[in-house]
Image (cartoon, rainbow, N blue to C red; front, side, top):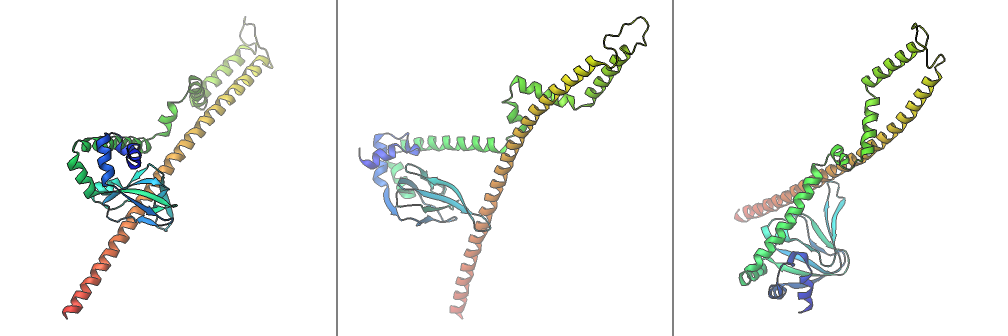
Length: 282
């Protein structure tokens, strides 16, 4: 097995290919060298090939409306990128630049079609890998979009935390206030010696009641602190969710902005061509 064949066998996208399929695929791939800071392709370019990093690093990024670069990921040796644009002939959804001296294996769409004509069974293997990646992407997006701070933290609560949360919530309610007021009123009435034949068990100045109220205040303060920790955890999760949503919105806006600029440049180019044709005819 050649070095390229051994390398391709370790790439997850081709992990289901057998030895003959891997050898045939390696035969139609080309190795290209890129210098540091050299662009592979720009956002919006038409894609007809995929890339596999053999040596070096490639940075995949987009730019926001202010021109600031947002790095999506850095492709390391063994990583593959550009497959979506190659498969559907659509525009590139990001720009790519070599971070350092980089060697890439390139698979063009026409070469892939020739390979699949020779090895039709390999198409099912590639589809299986694509299906698995798509399923993982869907699960990731579903989890990131529908995350609920309350539901997410509820799954990790212990019984003690649930009890503390319930007591803290109940202690701040009107029923708790009425229950305490009623208990204090009954306690005081029973111990002011106004009921004939009843011997007070906590006469004025109600020392036992004072101790009980102090203990209640201590325990309630602890429960409130525990509940505040839970609220802080919810706030952190909520902040993460808001950040993810804002980042997605920013990326979508940047994508639309660059797409509009690309369309504007194409329209200006077509207008220039029309002007030249009109000028030549006149």
